[in-house]
Image 1 (tube, rainbow, N blue to C red):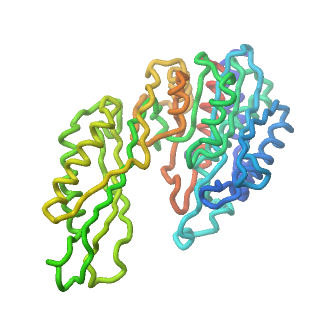
Image 2 (image 1 turned 180 degrees about the horizontal axis):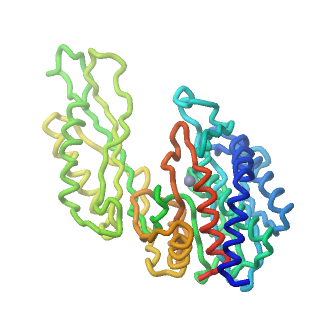
Length: 412
Ligand SMILES: [Zn+2]
């Protein structure tokens, strides 16, 4: 049988496995894996279920628990399952077990933790982020096993904890404590972001900077403004002044979407509870996604100056604090083998040309890239991650599983 015939059999088997994909989603959705930072029990139950499932399929499952006294059992689970290939070099698919909380339940049309199937759509918290990655990678392996096909490289499925907060008990832990698992020779795929047509392969990220600006003035009665220093008015002027950042850091890089740096005022903390008091303290936040060529220290300095100058005429002072600061990781070469292998697989399954791109949002791939491991982030998204009525498409689960199976079978 030619390799193409073998892939056709695997792809056909994956189409037949669609009902099993729905059932797997159902089992995953009902095992609530909200992390302890968000008040949840962690990923233990979901990890136990998946470890059992993969072991029954005949995969070799290794456990790399990260201690965390906040969850039942005292550890956050990290699993790696291997399917031996013709060569020892590995192809990784890394998915995460944890989910974000459902948020306002009144915005959901059904229980977030009970799978609801409507046509091609599978609704439930985690269906897209990141059960999509779990289901597609596991089912690709299962199809290979059922057809009796040996992968080119050894397939390694990593299912990690703690992606939605810091990855400190997940991938970051794995790389720190068990770095020997990974080699720069490996192909590393992270199905945790992408585009709706499945053509975006994410290879680079902007630097991330979250700034907290605290304005201090003087509270007073709203009928006597001359007695106070109104921090809300000063904040409004500061926010307008900060529009200058876009002009002062004007660079554009066509690899990125959007191509320029972004500086968005986002969260505003509550100030006074009543209408007739002028606030003497206000706090707002700026979410900055900065092209890698800019130094974050320079951005911080300009934010401080612009806000200070805007607030000063109102007798208001400003202090600046970075609450998150992540300089961009080195990018994955758009010509890296993992990008080539994925591009070929996407062409074979979807008939589309993939495009390596950079994005503004951070992904766990940055942890790999900082260690010189060229990771590519890819999946076909429905763009509902973290939203109410999160869903994924069954047709996409089948298609993306076929893409991963293609990479497993052909390697690079
Ligand atoms: Zn995710």
